Image 1: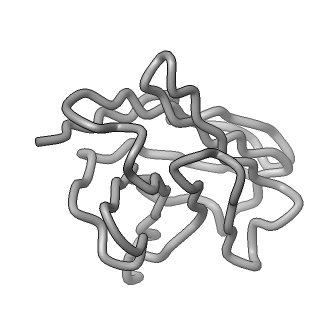
Image 2: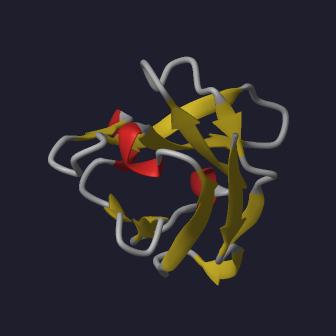
Length: 119
């Protein structure tokens, strides 16, 4: 069993930055691909970013490339999402996810943290 707890969301002005954190507890953290998803108001949940178990491979949805950076600290059992140059379209609930296989079908989800970008 793996438990995921997100933190770091909040209200930020357009152009600003936030860093989301995901605290991971449970077994075999290092074997999971970790990812971030988001659900904007009135929209389906979408993939944002993922990082492989070794931390050497990262993947991003086109809309955040060059602005967001995913990282993981295996010693601390933490996953981060650094978000820069935020815009109104980034407003969403952000979820941390863990996948034993492909990140497209996570095995575990966090409860989510709200990110609101204001103009």
